[in-house]
Amino acid sequence: MLRFILKRILEAIPVLLIVATITFFLLHHMPGGPFDTEKVTTPEIKAQIEAYYGLNKPVWRQYLDYMGRLIFHGDLGPSYKYFGWSVNELLAGSLPVSIELGIEGMVFALFFGLIAGTIASLRKNTLGDYLPMSIATLGICIPSFVTGPLLILIFGIHFKWFNSSGWFFPRDRILPAMTLGLYYMAYISRLTRGGMLEILSQDFIRTARAKGASGWRVMCKHCLRGGLLPVVAFLGPAISGLVTGSLVVETIFDIPGSARFFVTSAFNRDGPMLMGTTLVYAVLVVVMNLLADVAQVWMNPKLRFE
Amino acid sequence: MSAEPPIVTQHLGEIEPGHSLWQDAWHRLRQNKLAIIGGIFVIILAVACFLTVTIAPGTYATTNLALGATKPSLHHLLGTDILGRDMLARILFGGSISLSVGLVATLVSVIIGVLYGAISGYVGGRLDVIMMRIVDIIYSLPFVIFVILILVVFGQQIILVFMAIGAVSWLDMARIVRAQVMSLKRQEFVEAAVSLGLRKRRIILRHMIPNVLGIVAIYGTLIVPTVMLLEAFLSFLGLGVQAPMTSWGTLINDGRKSMEEYPWLLIFPSLFFAITLFSLNFVGDGLRDALDVRASKD
Image (tube, rainbow over all chains, first blue to last red; front, top):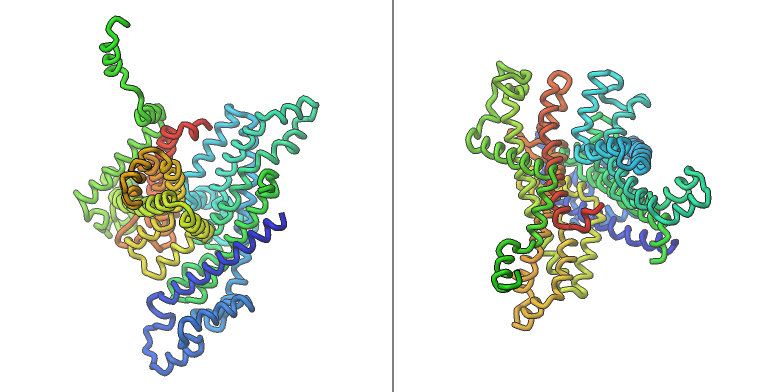
């Protein structure tokens, strides 16, 4: 198990280096510099600015400088747009919000997805099965940028139960978390139902029942562990999806997270900021994939021996 | 009956020509009502979209500032937007863009995926290991983020949207084709081709790829909705299709901004988009279930 975790970490490092390298050189070829303003600047001033940010050095030197600072100091460099601010400071202020949103979305998806899926599997081919599963099909087909505005329209504007945007009160978390988690809730409920149905028909469950174990005990001890395997396998892709999904949800609900930097810094030609945001999101995706893989092996003894 | 055996067999041959895989599949597909309804809906919609573009190319951009945003009426079936533009025309025009992105990007991804998978699967050995390792690495990269990056770096041109989306969605196709090719290449007709002295390139192009096209077509239809979703996502963030052109993602984003006053500007494009995605998914699933008996059992 420990060897497996180590191996996965060693595999993740080159992936992150590749991401950093590709991003760096892509951004280096970005047309239009960060300091192209309407104001006419003299060549001397421009040279001063470029020297200040080290842009007068050859590309490979800039690349090595950047990577060196990143790896040894975790320094993402200064922002071009927000003068005097470093990318680290800007992200430190906004990333917790994005992470909170992601966790809330995931909790929503897992909680309701697992419950709906389990109920559906126990009430197979009855209304308690068809109703949640039809809702799940809807949730899978409709993207978050459609459900988000519709949820605001219904619950924010029509019923006035929630604020239609903002991030001030605990109440403000509900609609964004729902929008972000809906797709994953739907998927998880379908996976749970499928996994549980397969386990419920197995001999060892019958044996447990025959030995007189109560319904709840069978459920918790035997079924969930096996039935949830497909769900755990889905967690990796789900979490990377949540990271990109938060881009949309933060835009819809005007949430002060990191996602807005992604789009605005692109329009501002703010290279370091864009680079920093990309790297942070890439790290999130890669680390979450890693955790999901580890969880999968830990849950499934069959995989442990491979 | 057994008095004239030759005639009987001939007779049988006429009435009962045997069920090929495709006939069976077609039969199963026809049983799947949702897939058929979805397919018909998509076809009608596509015809309507492309007819609007060819017959009345300018209508989606014709403004009527005096009229402004109006509710659905007899004159404008789905209402008008803030600039007095007819929503039905805009939705159909946006639909033609969204559908073409779906088709072209799918085509790009299918071409890359099929060639990559076929080469990797047929050549095998060390090349196969390296090629599949590359796919694994690309899998673990945060894709959507790269697409966004490509679009902001190289500008938001529609052709780039096509290419970028196509270039990131070929991985599954490559894996499927590789698996198919690996089982195909051990069959006799390949041996025959090899013994006739055909080169690898020719075997791959003439014998491998035509034989996997059926599976490719099916999984290709499942790529279309995901690709359309990605395009709408990018347009929603303001990175995809740019004004004055429009796509469903752009329309939904515009509608969202004024949904308090004019909810129909949000509701209609969302409805069209959702129903189309729904239908495409049903068609894709239906096709897959019809051809792949094993997968359809669950």
